[in-house]
Image 1: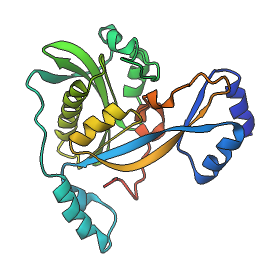
Image 2: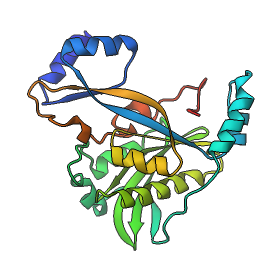
Image 3: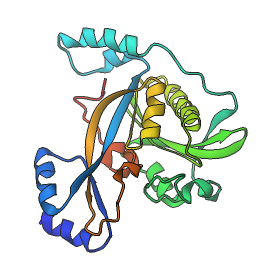
Image 4: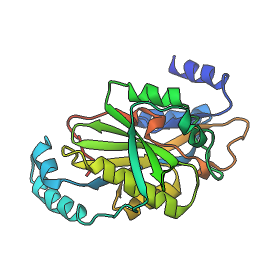
Length: 249
C-alpha cells in the first residue's frame, strides 16, 4: 500500500523529496527510483548544561562525563550586531511577502506563505513562535522556534539575501532569542544549506546527526541537489520528540 501511495504522489508532482526514514525505508527507496541527493544536518548548542543534567531522564556512568563536556561546549557567546533585532509576531502577514516570494541566489527551497507559516504557529504538537528579523529597522527575514521541554529548535530561518556575514548575524540573533527562555537547555537546528550550516557552526553549534535526503526526479529537473535549502520545517522533525532521549548533546 505504501509503494502504491508513493507512485500515486509521483504522478501528481515533478519531484518528490523524502528525509531520513527507518533502515527499511532507506533500503527500499532506491528500488523505487529515489536517489540520495543531499543531507539534512542537525546541529546543537548547549546553553544550560546543569539544568540539562538535572532534567535528562538518563542515569548512567556517562552522564557526569557528558555534563563536563557540555559545560565546556556551552562556554563563549557571540555578540549580536547592534543594528540587528528580532520582533516576535503573533501572525505572519503580507509584510513578510518580500522574503517569502522567493529564495535568494540559486537556493532551491520550499514555498512558504503567511498562511502556511501561521498554520505552523497554531500547531499544538510544540510551542511554536515566529519572529521578524530586522537590521537597521529594515525587515530582512524571519525565523520560527519550536520549544519541546528543555530543547528549543530553530526550525526555520530565511533571509532576503545570501551572503555569509548576513547569515552569521541572523544566526547569532536567532540563537540569542532562543537562549532567553530560562527553561532552554539546548538549542537545535537543521539545514541542508552549507551557508547556514557554516554560520551556525561559527556561533558554537556542533554537528550531531545527519539524515539523507532522497529525491525522486524522473525528469532530471533537480540538476544540482547541493542547492537544496531544506529545514526542520520541511518534515516532522520540527515537532517530533523522544521523551527517553530529549537532547542531542
